Length: 278
Image 1 (tube, one colour):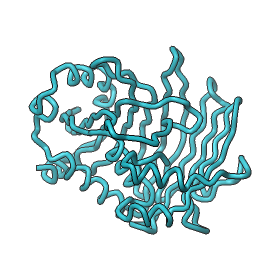
Image 2 (tube, helix red, strand yellow; image 1 turned 120 degrees about the vertical axis):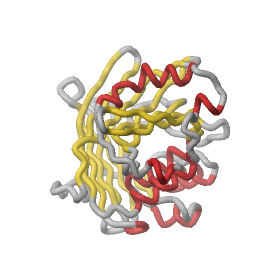
Image 3 (cartoon, helix red, strand yellow; image 1 turned 30 degrees about the vertical axis):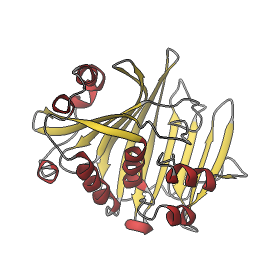
Image 4 (spheres, one colour; image 1 turned 135 degrees about the horizontal axis):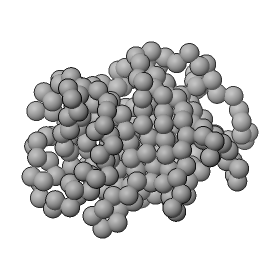
């Protein structure tokens, strides 16, 4: 059934704007399996298909719009994502920056070509930091973990959250799957959503393209009873099947020296089932 649904043609539209209203209605519908999964989809199989699909995608670029809602304030920004290679050779690059209201926020991340190392660096007007994760050592602890990119992101969310709710949305001739979940009870060694954001999320919502399984929107949420309040929302837009022409995405310039080695911290997160955070 999951494979059949992933064969339906779709795109990205106003369905993404219904996260809060319709997502909360789904949460309030009750805890029975019929209300959580009215399509009776095999969600683990669906996610396995999505991970496999994007682990084999050599070349992808998307524009990013992101938003943080916290303590009654809203911070927005833009960015770009790209990935190249397949399987264990896959690499990705990510850049985020704040808009005029948050111009001091800057984050860069990439799996380097010179070594199997994930490099992350960020800077705000308050603090800055850089970290590295040696991927070969993580692979020895979790050989089935995708190395990078969209595939790793979906794998990580599956490890961290119990994704047990799925609904189908249609916008004109475009079709989407909205997956929602709550943090698993046994998750330990968890980390904030963003390295410069000292908060965690009890819930997650993922808006998937029903044709390709591409995650057009990811929303980390605070659970207030049965209500889901967004904390961080990330939209991936203008998706193309090629590598970005911006060379600094995959080979970022150093903005914060002296990266901390976070390999062991991430290895602990993976082995305890939390999925960690890239």
